[in-house]
View (spheres, rainbow, N blue to C red):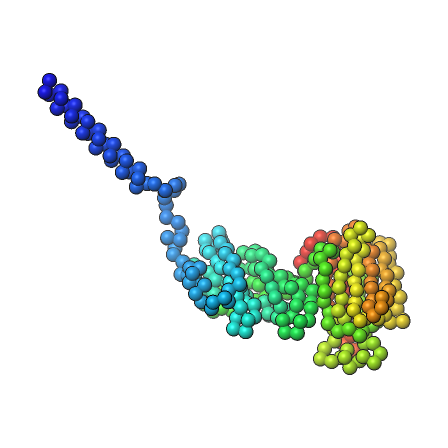
Length: 308
């Protein structure tokens, strides 16, 4: 009888020890889910952290930080948009894994202008879109795409180059650009993809026209959807007496007709579009050879969004 009591007590003590051991094991594993294999960050520690990068810039200088992970290099990247000492917009591209910093050389491709990130194709190719406004003289250009791409891999900050590309916008996205008024439309032609305009100075306004540089007059685009009309209004612009609305071949892919008319001190160009026209771009240039330095504008249309 005494033996049975001793055996029962021993059994109770043994069970208590086992239960206590299981309880401790469950507590130590709380919050651990899935595979407990260390992450690549532990095997390959980064040389920089996001906090390290932020400390490199003064208070209030950082505008935005975009984080990017590349599966091909198993690396984290940061794009820092900031204001430099002259309060000009700049972009720095960091590899947290290597600690390397590269400057995005947007100003190599376009005049000083405000930009924003459009897309990160991969770690060596980034796309930015400009607002088209020159920060130095407020001259307005058509928005462009700037492609920054890596040419080399060094320890310096100049491994990237940049190229400007033509951007097509939806017809209903209004654009204002141009700079000098007091000009006449000297010639107009309809091309296979759009309308080309040539400008000359108004009589007596030659000194203003040629001062510093020549460029197209200010204009604004408007799209009237129910009429499928694209309207360009040039400010302070006349029409040369030697030109008229151009004739258009019915096989033209995008344009049905073009009408020029004077509206006070402004000129309106109404382009009746075909349904195939969905996007447009504007190219501001000069005709080569540059004999008289007359500026020209080319309004091109497309059926699909594209970057050239």
